Length: 356
Image (cartoon, rainbow, N blue to C red; front, side, top):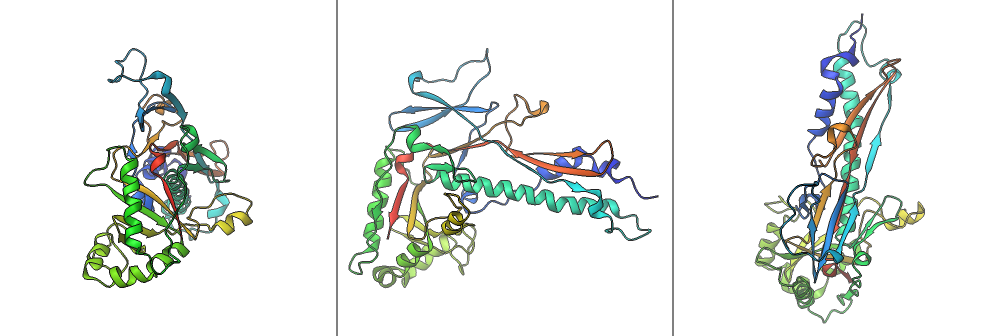
């Protein structure tokens, strides 16, 4: 007699769901920066208001509870729906037919490990989708997987997209650090007084832009070969440094108060065009995208509650998972993952584009 693995306590839906939700989140660059402030919400939408040059999120509240403090102009208050990410993978019993050796009572462990690989892949896909949405938010436009726009934070608030800033990297006579300081001053000015001692600028660079930046005459002669440059590089975890806690092996350079990072995405824009989509998880090769880090409220995110009865009217979690079983024939089992995020750029006027 073989073991009844699907009815074993170790393979119960509750146990497997807890295992998925306890799976360690391993974000990519943007997720690791702690850039987005969490806004707890128990509803499927989030209210955002425009007050002068500052956007702030108002958590929705239940009827009968005290309102949030502060004088707010309701005419500028708008509500935005969270998005839904959902994916599953059906595993047939026939797929593990020959996994267990005859006479060995190990099919439980093997099936858990087998299903776990697929479940972790589902979680990785959710993480990649979050990274794609965060990458869109720091540029002001959040895209779906097919290239369609989910939210354009410039259009939503009637803010004109800032004109591209040329760094003149093709001119060997210019001093790049001075150009970088000018970009930083623009960020500080557009922060409307919210810049503080912990704030700095970050630029995600395409390959061509980063190579032009680090290969420029003024950068190599006046910055890269100095002892101070090595200290800055270590502080931001440049490849080969003693402390790679932040960026790991990602090529980066701190210059003029801005950290320039050679962002490594997944799909190139040429690949995206070949697939008939308009976006890719990456930065265009000859561009850099600048955004503030450490400016309070500049980027925020909310996760709505799940769709099940047990999640209704509770504070939303980043990830929900479930395990669906074929209770009639016991022929298949299906792990599924769900997430209901909203990634918000509250200061789109501070999102700049640099060109070579």
